Image (cartoon, rainbow, N blue to C red; front, top):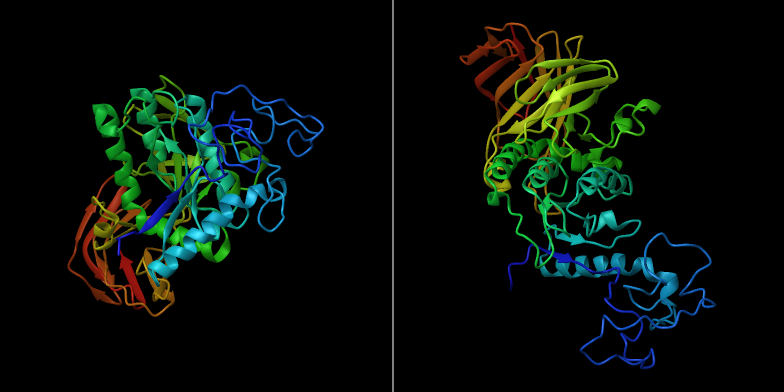
Length: 442
């Protein structure tokens, strides 16, 4: 058996590079003989056929509905006209592909990436937003596109990083790799015959990519928990600010992206810019890299943004589980946890972690809740029977002033505590995530 973990199904709108008989002028019920003349003159446009030229305008440059796709007047084996079921083609191919992989790799979750989707496809496949351009405009619009599909119920979604059509530039690719590192589905991809755009082609892009991906891989446990939230509640993983802060003030913000409820990404979307104006809702927001905090007041703050840097902030009041980044997701999962406790203005924080085997359908699982108040961290398994192998071995406390001793369940532990102007870092712990724990930092 071939070791197939998943499948990528493309061009499944379905796409076609010619219209009707592909220039052969043969009857529509005959398959044209290759070579197909995709550059043949367009056929006569029958404007009286509403299945080819409907009574509404389509905002693209094609002349009829059948352009670049299968004939919309085609009749399926069941007698259904393609016009009426066209948008289901990719969805049904997704279902057939998933059924195959489930039979081929029983009890193994398949990864399927589909370009064409429909309502309900998120239960079957992941999605990317199709052929975009290597342009600053498409870098910007990719954020809204990812938001859209998250709301459509397809949480694993992303755009072609650095652009599909057109030759990217060093600066554009660096900025896009930074943002794309936080797409739920993160992939660089471009068309045949265009300039290569692997990050290592430019030193600056490689540096920007490594920096951003270190953050992504540190956050894999947090993001995985957000995916499970999506499964259970339908919440998108990549979210607009208005999703968490329902105010008209944030409704038009398509220049920043929340990952889950706690991680705010503020990318540079303008050529030549070395700073970015980012809006911070009311509350504390901690810089991912320096741990310095900003007191948000629903207003813009100008942030430094050198070419190799993307601004990432942690929402005050959050507890974010992280792991040491590695070269593969499997290696990351073997590392112990570090909890980043980003306190709110009143000194509290909450968070959660979801753990399962990452591969099978009948896996055991465990949900674990975290809460922090008055210098006490509580760890409480919520549900599930899975035994979590990895322990919490370090804490990063943000917004906490001074700390010298740590006790776990009333017993003082021998650990290392480093106090900086912006954080308290505690290492050398061994907190079991399978039982309740009360950790006092004083």
